[in-house]
Amino acid sequence: MAALEYAESPLKAEPPLELEMARLIRSYGAAAVVGRVMGLGELRRMSTVETLIDAHAARTRADNWAKWAKDNPGLNRILINAEKLRDG
Image (tube, rainbow, N blue to C red; front, side, top):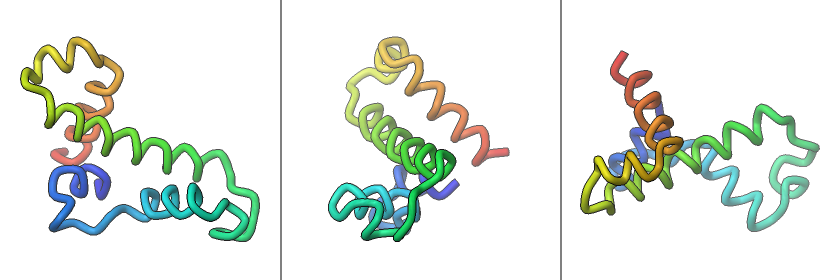
């Protein structure tokens, strides 16, 4: 999973396409970036990638990962599911 790989090693891994698209769309608008109306699936993938990367950063900054997981059950579940997908 490219998003988790990037979240874990942003200096080594390439940013996922969905993250780059989200950043460009925020700066220039969807019409300028993709030239069409975007579908729900594309928008969800971009949102999920951003959420996963942000959640990983927040957990990494936390002094106590167990407390962070308890305080952020939804984000923790996203990270656990991404790690399971990556690890098989």
